[in-house]
Image 1: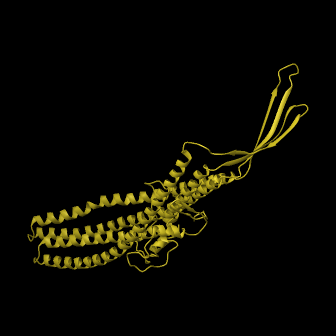
Image 2: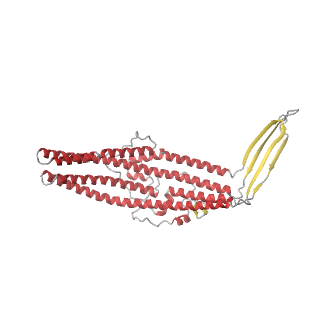
Image 3: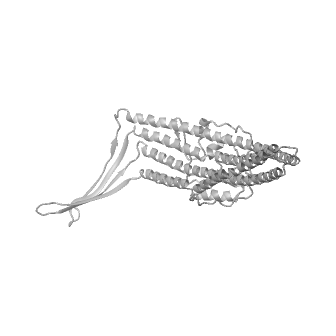
Length: 453
């Protein structure tokens, strides 16, 4: 959960529109000008408060919960939020008077060697005549809001990373399952070819071809093992566990890829401005830049401080203190001439504000592109999976027919091996496509800033 309560304020050009709201300022939305709808026409559904539960996989749920509780990047972001909160409190304290105490004692080296002492209180109050303190507080508040959104965004990224690595872990498991099925199929073919060769019904070349296909399939095991270990180690890092000794929670042992059971919750492009925490962080940086302009402009105006003292002094220790001192005054600072330095600093702050605005717009366009890409990918992979399923069915039929014909001597071994390769390749493609579809759902929810972090 985000700990901040004061949401962003907008900078349009160099103007500051300060306030505490639950959404970006309408003028900022107008500057970004999001399209009214997404280009890809998919029926929206309600946003999930914990989108990863749409996979209906308890193992994934457990990993995400562990990651959100233990991830070290999230911990670092939380510490930076605490630091920002402390700095904000420090800036606010500048609106209060300061009070310090001091004392001294000494010996007059002379005929009487008298010990003299003094003590006093020294205070200072800044009424913020030029508005600098208020601008510094706004800047610190914006820094705090940014740190708050960065923490939330880190949680968004970690949840998506865990889901993607878990999908990869499951994909490699499905690949291993397919590898076993493929080697069993090719071993049966090799046995048949060998028996036919021994009976004088097949050439030795056929045996070697079948054996080569089997060896090539077995050779994939090492590559799958590498990818599986890499996914497991990545999961370990994400949940702050030592890689190498970490074992993911038990997953379904059915050689399948997690299937997202719910439709995409697209909403509208303008919703990104209210949900995407990286956009809200960029907006907070806009607010900080606007406050920095106010800080620099304050230096162009007079400043006033009110110092005061209260003390006892010029007395001996034996007789306590000999005199009571008190004074209060005012110090006015009028900026007259600095060679244009102060105005140059204002212009630099304004230019930085414009740069922050450009960065905000770029961040929004990137986010919009991520949503569009994910929606296109979901639609494309769903279609691809259907086509691959049809390809597998046809390849299974073709393999059965070619195998039967080969046994009768009516087809060559090349026909059998070619049908096997097509079937294995289609099954492998379906595994990869199903994993890509699952990852596209993850990318979509990360892109639209679904809640639940």
